Length: 601
Image (cartoon, rainbow, N blue to C red; front, side, top):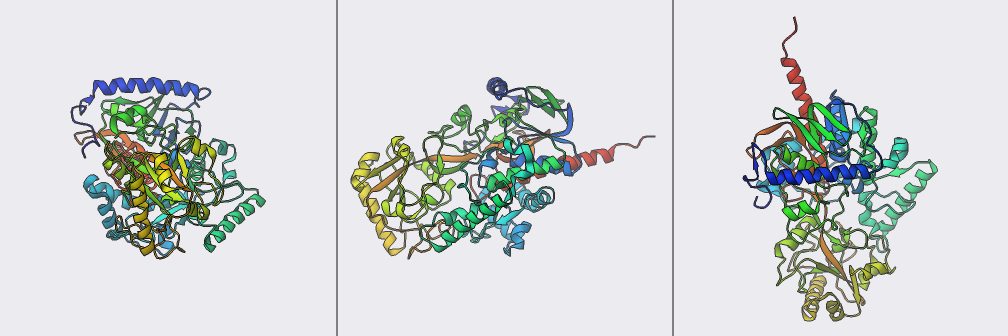
């Protein structure tokens, strides 16, 4: 995996390099400053636990809940003043084949199908043992969470696997999402829940699966039906005095409630400064308020490094930065760097959970439905289409980077639409027919013109090329066959499409002025590179040896998905599962160790 892991010269079993140590020292100083800036001293912890978990996101909270239910004393430390991390900001899709929720919904999944599909998606970038571990542990992990928290889950019916044509792929999908949860369950702790990326409309209770239809509310009867259902849920919740939570808010709140019931403390404003070790074994963590010893193990679930400019510049392709991500702002790679200082090998550091994004003022907007709906197309800096606009979002950005050259710039790219498209579909949170915010135009993220040629001039692409591209695309829309990129051939392409458009629900011509161009940059949900781990979530050195006492899960570890993306929830599903695997391995090891002790006379 060229470019995705460190060379052997910078990592060795003997320890990290001088460069790593210097970078780590700088990170430690920054963490101390961050801790001081968070508003007061961190919460006090006991001096020792069986398990110390770093990070109060989906991976960390699942790990701590599992540890507690296995009889271990666990604590969670969290850098932020809130819990939930990037998971709380997300739509909280969860991809776990053969789980009890989808089987109860009648999904005809099998372990053999799931194994064949994942192997085809991942290829040879991830050891088969790790793939098998994820598939085997995912269903019992979800069952444990449901037994020991208020969380319940819904099948996202119809949300296709991202490559449904692959062997074992499911056109109807395998993804689930959290059901509605009453935030009152958390009491005062609800105020410390990390906020959502985009809040639901006031008075409505919206699930991830609803957005497909809310986007079509102006043109499709099912859209109106779903809109009314969302409003009814909100009204009923208000009459019951509830504080309804869905998506990532529900997931994070439900896991936090489970930890509270299990007696697991969550220490906010408590950044990880470093790991402590004795005799080659990781024995605890160092925080601004002092060390915390871990008798059995440390599990790092602290997220990726998407907000570390230095790490992104070191590991990832240009152009890149920290202002194109929607990951939690505290994700600056602290856990990854601490693991590296302890000798961990790193993998997949060049990659992320990419997706086309629009750099709107304040925060980028991660495009899902907008680039798949009929009546839009993506062009590069030469005014030419270069990809199936409806392809899995990570694939689109991979193409942008792979083809980006001075002669053929692909970053930024441009999403081209017309007024007919704007009259029909929700765009982010702007209803059809309503004007787009002036700030979007002022920032340069969006341009508008009354002809294709004028639009090309505004965005700096050749006028004749853009006119030719739009004309060719319009011909494909008329016949319903995209001869260049096969948009609409896959069931995944059609998920966010308009079923009333014929003959291809993904294709419609651009003809009604004014025309719009939205700047597209490589956004991400977080980075996917981190510590190399084995099938038991144990952190490995470059020579394959195990760093005893150290585990990693979530975006602090190299993703089990490799450079690809199996379906909605391929981030959170494995994150929770490997947190569960790590905690169980610690518990099993503790049991074996105890059973081997000689009996006292």
